[in-house]
Image (cartoon, rainbow, N blue to C red):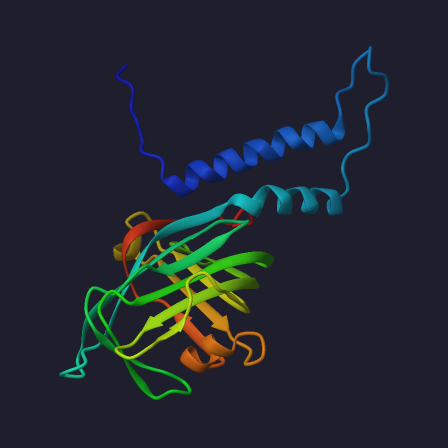
Length: 234
């Protein structure tokens, strides 16, 4: 009889692995009844099972890629200057970074008006220092979402014709909310997205507050990468 092979989705494979781990861990909690080991241990309580499931689900979301946005051109004002934001995240860490700008552009700032940024003179890096909230949810049959909250360090350097603002070696503390969406295999074309919202306090982050304001979301069209999220409860 000819064997038939059915493709297994990435999300289904991860779910099988997760619940396989859950079964092994559950067996370890319950214990094995044998003549040598004596009476079997009592079955784990619901609270113990929920705690175990939460622990195993910690690493069921991760991803990385590039978000592309377009900034105003200094001559035309049209949104034609590309600016790439590289990002990555998992249960323990996340970052978002703009390494440079290939062309001059105009940045509308919160406290300094419109600032012309010269070519190859913009740098911004957000490096997560704590993940205090990690929440996975199922939006529909094809879509999963994870939300992270915590603290970060943000370093920004802006080069103007007559001066420089900030320094890539000096960071300011801020808090954040990350929302990553897994729309299926295929990255941004399949519905994946990544939005990094940062909350800047004027006392803790005076430079970034002056540039971006009290709240700013770093995102764009996801042109590269993949986000994978498995909801163990779905």
